[in-house]
Image 1 (tube, rainbow, N blue to C red):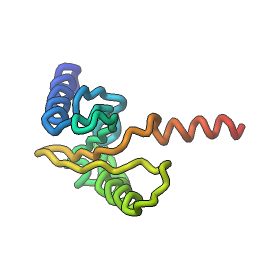
Image 2: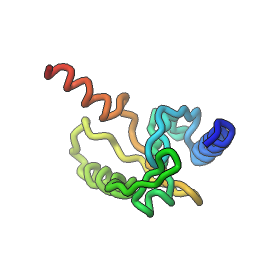
Image 3: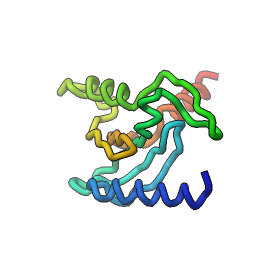
Length: 132
């Protein structure tokens, strides 16, 4: 993907997030099926994270790496279902990220969740540094 095409896609994703009530989106990471954004929920000024995943790649259970597709065993739909399940108990642990909403566009899925401040991946790296 060229920078011009990527920039155009990012502008469109920003516009969709803003139209759906999420202001000031800032991309924080690329993923194998999409991107992750931090934004402000206009409804209550809360910082949230939007994980955006391609519907096509999700439906094919695949990722695109340097133009080649590979099968994977992960799905934003399963992630949504797990997060909703973990959030259904009113007495849930505050250490579990809160599910906000799930949206769809013509080409993407959008999983909106509480901003935990750090990614689970980065948290694991820090924990392993302490273990050493």
